Amino acid sequence: MLTIEHISKSFAASTRRSVLRDVSLTLAAGEYVAIMGESGAGKSTLLNLIAGLDTPDAGRILLGGEDLTVLDDTARTLLRRSGMGFVFQAFHLLPHLSVERNIALPLALNGVTGQQARTRVEEMLAAVGLNGRGHSAPAELSGGEMQRVAVARALVHKPQLVLADEPTGNLDAESAAEVLELLRAQLKRDGACGILVTHSMIAAATTDRLYRLTVGGVLAAAA
Image (cartoon, rainbow, N blue to C red; front, side, top):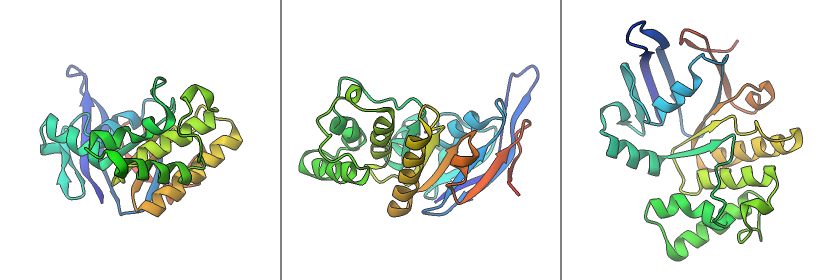
């Protein structure tokens, strides 16, 4: 599903500081991994490369067999729109849209509208335990509920890959546990592969495998 082959990335032409060095990773459908590392180790850079928001200096990134590193900006945007889902620490819900319309955004961007979209949104509302809340505004929800909406939005279009960047960083322990359990269950149900970037060992323990990214850009499986 996702194959990262020997990617490297450096910044600052004058110093050529290596952020990522010869990073490789392969994820199958339904596989869910965590990546941990100190601040400045390159976790955000790695996510940006996987998402096609930046390109590596060397190596390849393939999603479903398609090489992101050779696509132009438009093609990467289309692949990101259809093949990826994102969950962020800060929720990033649109406050002027209802819960159901927030969830439906990826469907609309992929040309899915009408009854097909409504049915899929209803399925996701049920899956994340928010039946009957579709017409609510984000401001009427708790933090945990808003992150449930974000998970539903990330998965509503059945992406191949979900990237979760500190998705429980703004939640209390109980809400965080519920969201982590939900995210894992939905990834397994849909057969999507997932990458969780986190500083929390509790969060990392909900994934199938843990990797550590060191300052200097080396990714290695945790013992």
